[in-house]
Length: 547
Image (cartoon, rainbow, N blue to C red; front, side):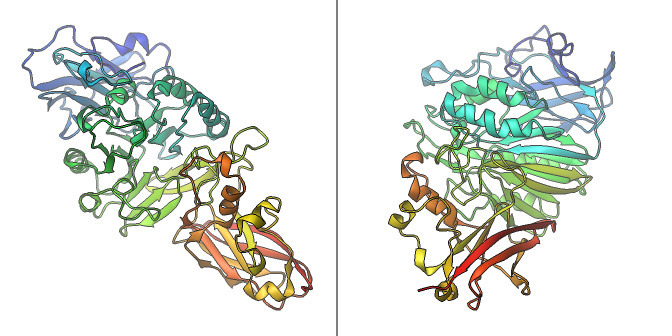
């Protein structure tokens, strides 16, 4: 079901079939064609009773107002735009049959201009501004403690790759209890005709799902940013919005700015920028929210990334302005886009988490036993997603691999001088043979233990213990992951042309003891993750006499 852009009532079409649904009603009449103000009422539905709901935030994407004692609101809307209700704690928004949350009314009197020649259908003409735009929220129980599924960059380039999304992340997520889910962009990979099927697949997880657009969700025939989200608006509604759940405020900001002019599909004619309108929305919204609220801020493009520092396509140009607005607030900022996994602490109060991509290396790599590409990310993390656990105003996140064993936290490899990365050596050995080889005694002095903690960051701590010896600290080392480097060298024909191993922010290294005797030795790796939780793994190292 598309966002509401015409006279209709959700109560009749949805309330009977969707538990916890809310309704939005447009009046039978229209305001004057010259009207520049949106007005309406927010109602609460509790059982069969409906009553005006005061104190609810409503926005036009810049100004934020609160409903009065009669549940009424007024907002400027002088031209094309959107009005959305900011779900308060203890109430539910509407959902369609695929659990896509409906939070906004799109106002576009003339619709998407036909002369733009957009490949994918945009917004139908809405006509003059309705005389009233009413939202009906349904009362629901909403504990302070809840979990959220966090997807980013499923990015299927074809119907075949959408099968992979279904059979990996979605299937695994269906077994994880959560209050709702979020996708932080690149829902698709340029082919916007797949939204219907994608929403149907993700909708089977069975929880409300909120989505944010990415650079591959653009209408790339648009001459500039103004009409670059036409298909998104038709399918999902307002690209930027917010909602409350428990003691947390979730702010979804579209920070992909299409620069145009029309270019071939897939071109990088965009930049990461929140923009003055979104910054004003954030500022006005936070003015209405208690200072001890946990803020979960979602964007597609990172505020900052290790993978491409200074790139206008991979970092947010007006990050400093955003940091000033949220100064003193407790903020978890989540994003995707780079197909890496990163933790950054941009201020004492702002934790920036670049999430693991559902598609990993854009569905590259050799097929697994299921026929699905291995899709290991270019920083060595297996493709997957995260679970955000909110407990009051405290939070943690955890990584969940989309394939293989569901509890994998790290990978241990050994490097010695005898196998330093020659492609011909890689192709002459079986997978992992060169990463856990028997090491001659005379090569131990040049040998390294290399550990990729898939969701590691600056606060992760690791030690390595060889046999019964004392544990030694490992050093966080920015470098490519040896496993994914070997994988891409071994199977170059299975990866997308732009995919290559890059320096990872979550690698730890330590030298092997030079005095190990020949034989098999247990290598134990233990430590704590970004939240102080224990992590551990082990491997066997064989030492030969050398020669």
